[in-house]
Image (cartoon, rainbow, N blue to C red; front, side, top):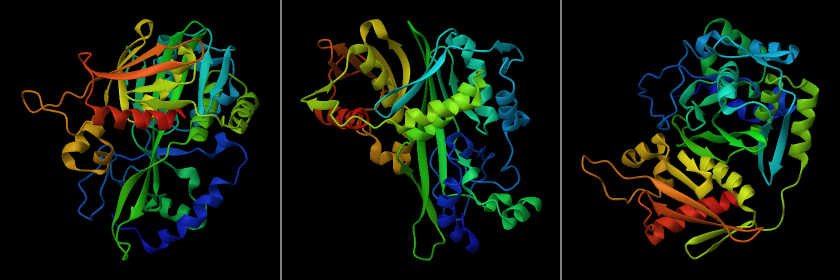
Length: 377
C-alpha cells in the first residue's frame, strides 16, 4: 500500500490527538477494516491483519456503533445482551491490579452470563470477533485501528465525505484476547492487548511493513473501565478506577527468575496462576484447556503465529516451535503443558512439557521460559 504524501504529517499529530483528553476511556474510537483484497503494492500484511479497503473502512459488524456505548453509560439500570435479553445491573464489580496486569472481578455473574455481554461490548466498540470459545472462556478480536488518534480536521472530514476516509489512517493496529475465569470470588475478566506498527521499508517511502509493538497495559485498563460502564457502573466511578489503577507504580523487585529448566515465580499459587494465564495470552499462546486443581494450562500457538512459520513472516522470529518435527500429513505438534506448582506460601514454580508430559528440548524450553519471564517480571 502506498501512502499519499499528506499522510507523512500524521506522525506528529498522532501524539497530540492522543494527549488531548485526560480521560483514558475517551481516547478510544476503534474501527475494524473490512474484507481484504490482495494487494500488489508491496505492503507486507501480518497473517491475521487485513489490508485497508476504502469501501467499508468505517463499517462495524451488525450495524453497531459507539452510540451503544453512550447508551450503556446513560442507562445504569440494565445492560443489553447480544441475544436481546437483559443483564441486570451489576454492583459487585471492581478493578484489580498485580504489577502491570489489570483485570475485573465480577462478583455475581457467571462466565456464561457475561459472555454475550462481552461479545456485544467489543462489537459496539468497533471490533470484529475473530474467534470465540465460550466453553473455555476465550475470545479474540480482529486487528482494528484507533481512529481517535487521527486529528479531527477539515481535510479528514472532506475525505470521509467523498468516501476516501480509508486513506487517512494511523500507522498502528490493535487486537485483544479476552479471557474469563471462574473463581471463588466470582468471574475474573482479562483483556490482553497486542499491537502492530507500520514502518517504511525503503528510503523512497513507497513500501511499508508491519512489525509488533509492546503490549499496552494502560489501553487494557481503559477498555476494562469501559466494560465496567457496560455492566452498569457509573462512568465517573469507572474513570476513577482506571486512573487510580494506572497510577500505581510497578514493583521494583524481580518477581520471576530462571533456574535451569524451571521458572521461579515469586507469588503464591493463586496469584501466580492468574499472572501466568495473562502472560500466556501476551506471548501468543492460546489456552485450549486448563485444570486449576492440577495446576496445568494446556496451550498451543495462536493459528496466525503457527501459519507464519511456513510463510517466514515477522512472527517466525518469535516461533519457538519452528524446529518441531512434523506429524503424518505435514502437521506440527505444537501443544504444550504449562505446569504451575506451589513452592511454599509465597513462591511457585513453572515448568513446561509437551502434550504427552515429556520434557521439552532444552533450547525450546529456554526460549519460551524466557518470554514468560519477561512478561512476569
